[in-house]
Length: 278
Image (spheres, rainbow, N blue to C red):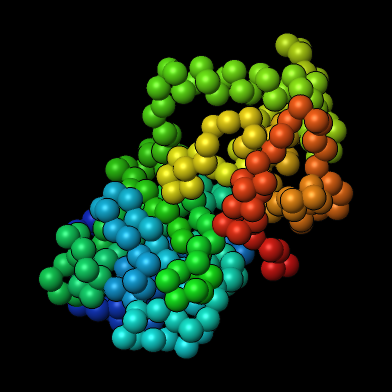
């Protein structure tokens, strides 16, 4: 597997078709849109107009994962549910390990950034998020948010600009929730002792910002250790309405002053949690 920029390929390069890309070693699959291995990550993706759920804004792309079902060419969708396995899991690895992916656009993909004919190389993108979504056909699909990298030094996930008021509000909520639980994890009870005092982290159940747009309120925040914070954000664990954990044994500790919003828990289960395929 070869990730990132490769010799002989420059942004704006045009190719006749996917077979030429394959022959030149720029996309390692003659037909499928994602090339990668679920154990390592995805090298490249092609936007080819295959899925109606794809959204292209140039620097930001919502890319639809692959479905193992029967293809409906008229509706540009598939008769089946997607899973976080195979090529879809490969693309998810890019997000979790901060691996950039090469993006190509086909003339079949309707977009101002697509070529009139053939396939164009559009450069490197970061996979900044992925989640489950129910499409108009009622099928579970996986969507991946791709963010354009202007140069190799931009490979770190882009930061979201926030206002002073938002920072102040977040700090107030963070301090309140940490003090409620005496700086200990609501899942494992761990409180990390630092020279400056106890440490824990605040985690939003329904993520803030696009595309989830979760609310920044205490009812949407948990006090967690770093390990369980990462697992919650990555969808490796979730929480039932009765506070039983999914993906781990046990239950979430919640005190009476902390009134969790069950709608946030439901959203996390339906859109963020990924059942392990191991």
